[in-house]
Length: 424
Image (cartoon, rainbow, N blue to C red; front, side):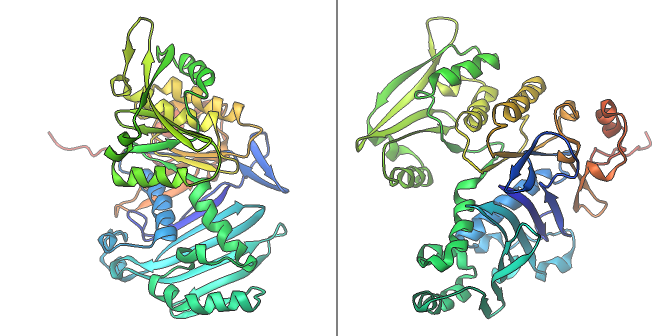
């Protein structure tokens, strides 16, 4: 679960921007987690080029750096709205819930130099206390953990690697002692609970196999008026996997390395595959679709909106417990009424699940308090210097809830396009 995220000096975010999933209002629709209340949803509205997609990119980029490090090709990811930002630190901080604990984990770096300059991990208590577990400042590393001899030896052996690579999370698989549970919880959250869907994502592994969950998929596809009435499957030779991009092959191999029987799906831009393993035997099927006739249609022949629905329905059918799903431009290729219905479906069918959704949109018809809580609504606005500013609707005085969209379009809340009158 996500509690909050902060970022500064990244892309269009020159100054620190923060999004919080802690409710500021009473009322239904929140998640209760060990006496802590969290919002189930967050929505970022904004004009084109306002920076709302950059916020999702910031969370994704922070995840990648925490797990894998930084490449020199990203040296210009600092906020280039001002020249002096080139040599300033950039900071990413995630406040989160993982495996029964609350944490605040963050790190800083100078993009232009490709150097990590700091890292920290706090455990948060339910009475708002912060317990520092780990901190790195430059070349200095300090631990505030109860360490036995085995744990101390591990850290001693890792110190030089950490200073060279930058972050302790890069070596989490070597932190095998029970004393390092907090680091493993953070890495597990990044790997398994922070799920990110971009607009033109080349591929996605779906938790729910449409063939195994045929009835539910067909029910929802009918609800969303796709015209699909049934699936057809064609068994393929496993050699088909060798034709996929290497990064896709690696993801599939990593998934199949997990023990036990399993089934999942691979969604490409032009194909949908069912992959399952039963008693050690792996099978793969290509899925095609029947409509209201006798012909089958391949996945690549379906509309962009139908393809996007498979990504979104996977969240409903097989939600990962305690996960958050970040979706950039949720309404892309999908009718506004269907987007609203999906949001109702998410909040209704998953109200017993601890699952969150955070998405960006410029679809004003979603700006309704009968659909989204007031404290779930955020706006992104481009400033005069081209930097982005994130702010909550909650900073404005509450008015008639039916006027939210008209107030937004009139510019009262900001986050809308600004047009310049020119002499003709």
